[in-house]
Length: 62
Image (cartoon, rainbow, N blue to C red; front, side, top):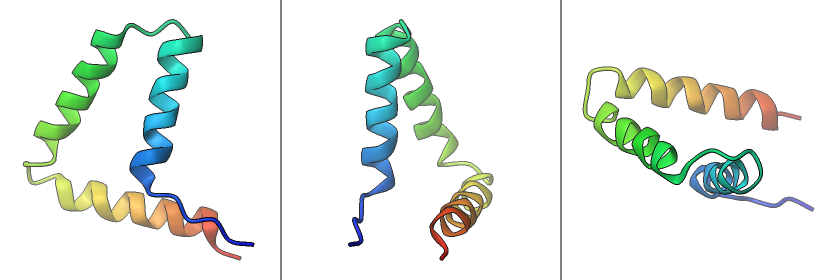
């Protein structure tokens, strides 16, 4: 059986876990999310996107 989850759901669960169990402050998580939002508008966005896609494909490949 194959389960498909959007990457944002997986990352959101990781952030929730980090805030809840690792003691990371919520404002730190929000700051990191804001950094990612602004980073997506730079010339590095295509490189980050391609690297993420390659990593996900490497993990999910049979």
